Structures are given as structure tokens and as C-alpha cells.
Length: 152
Image (spheres, rainbow, N blue to C red):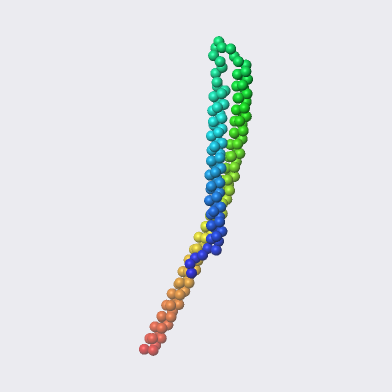
């Protein structure tokens, strides 16, 4: 009779959950990476706009241009703040997914260790049963040998 782990179906389900959690972590990491890249792009755009040189010497300053630049800078700063918030939220989501992955991994590991222990117990029982059978066969042979010696 071959070894059969009674919780094999549970182990399969937990393994599937573990695989799904790994995919969830990968997806959350991709989202976080996109947020970080967006934040970097906005920071570069803000630096470029903030570092724009004023009009050349001798030219008239246009108040409307200055006001538009100030408005663009405020909008860009607000967008940068929103992007930073999105990055923080994505990082928190990634941490949650990693925690869930760790929990799923622990569940699978517990079941695998249990399966290993049960397999070892089963193998030990098989060895004992085989030893008992061999002892019984040896006893029967010894008994037959005694009887044949007595009858001879």
C-alpha cells in the first residue's frame, strides 16, 4: 500500500494560494514602480520649470508669463504631492501583499513538514511490518528445521 497524505488536497489549494499571492506581490511591485517613475518624471519637470531662466536682459518682462509660470509650478507641485501620496499608498499595498505572501508560504511549509513527518512515520511502520514478517518466516523455518531434525 503506497503512502497517501490525507491533506494532499489542502496542500494543493494552499500551494495555489501561495502562487496567487506571489503574482499579487509582483503586480503590486509593478504598480509601485510605475508610481516611483511618475514621481521622478514630475520632479524632473518641476526642476526644469523652476530652473527656467527669466527673460533676457533688456527685454520687457511679461507679467502674464510670470503668472502662468507660477500657476504651472503650483499645479506641478500639487501633482507631485499627489504622485508622492500614490507612491506611499502603493508601497503600503506592496507591504500588505508581501505579508500575505509570507503567511501563505508559512501555511505551505507547515503542511510540507507535516507530510514529511507522516511519510517518515509510514516508512517506519513499513519497516517494522517487514521486520515482523521476516521474523515470522525465520521462526517458521527454524521450527521446520527442528522438526526435521527430531524426525530424522
